[in-house]
Image (cartoon, rainbow, N blue to C red; front, side):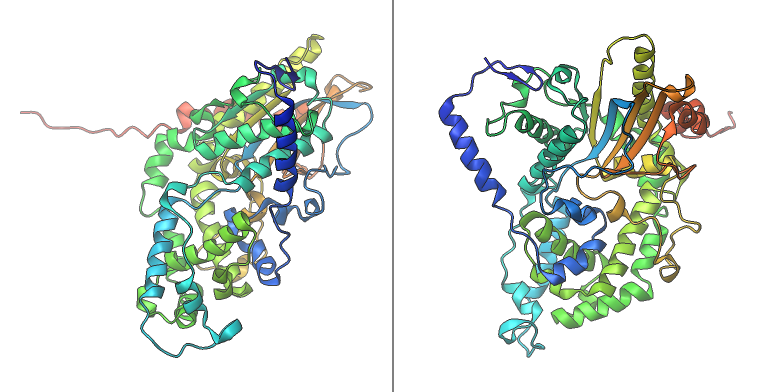
Length: 487
């Protein structure tokens, strides 16, 4: 029997399987080519929520399994005693809805009449002809599922965190590891891949067992926590189902910036401008991002756009995230109260246990969700808030905005709360301190811009939210008083 990082396994691994796994592992590391294409690299910063993690953290490219320790992380007599992380799933396929739009656009290209297109690219062929002849490899069954690159995102994140915080991720702690996930397959699979990465950290070359055979077990599904937006009646009514909630998104689609791109793309692809709309333009842009993220190739779809186009299309995506998940409406962030409370309950419990000289029952809590999980939470805490709201009419004024979703929540993005116990603290208040990391970089606190906070000060700053922000109250629809005349 083998003892793994999460406890005793129920099955023994054959030596032949070990050799096979080692070979596959080495081949897997060679399966993704380094992207050096200047066009793809130029567009990469503007893919919004479809951004690759390595484009936000380019320092990972030379060795994505090696941790990069932020110099602002506390050292010395302050020891991390708990890590609570909210993690977005890894790289995924397009949704079935996006694939259907792409198929429609591809059909428009194939239906083009004969004509002399402007020569573009090699061989004197225009972009539209190249795309029309290019088979679509996306299928409806993919529907947002995690791709192998997404599993790699998670395995590598696990390896880096385990190396960065060895005391928390030590083998003795894995029986107390807590994993929670959204019910979506891409999140469940991300949690499983993370566990496989931890296994790899402790047993290089040894194939990981099935997650169900690990003592810690698979991630536990909790949609009320990780998909709180689906369980908030007020959000569903006032934002999700409200045709006017995304007014600025729809207005920008018909505004001068998007209409200029529409005409340009119609001319480039040689299709009637009336056959195109903003949604089809956006799906073409996202296909460039998906081909890059999933296959690491410079797709011909990227040739349709330049950097100025990309900036406009990024803004369109950010408008949607802003009005649906960010500061656009108060309920967007307030709907995340249940997750915010849960995080602080874990931290409170760890503080209480340490004060009583008890072992920390959950040294590591990992919660797997979505961009739609992280953005409301960060907004609730006051991060990435611009002086003026993002609207359909201030694109030029918002060029240097803080709210850029691709820089905040790319694939595999992670928000980490790190609780420390400081042995030589002069006062009881200074004994427990906390840092936050966003995408493995220390995140200064929104209220102080300091990189470390006393835990008591952190709670005090958010005391009003912790006291008043309860999902059951926040998400209730206002009661309508109605009277009726009875005969």
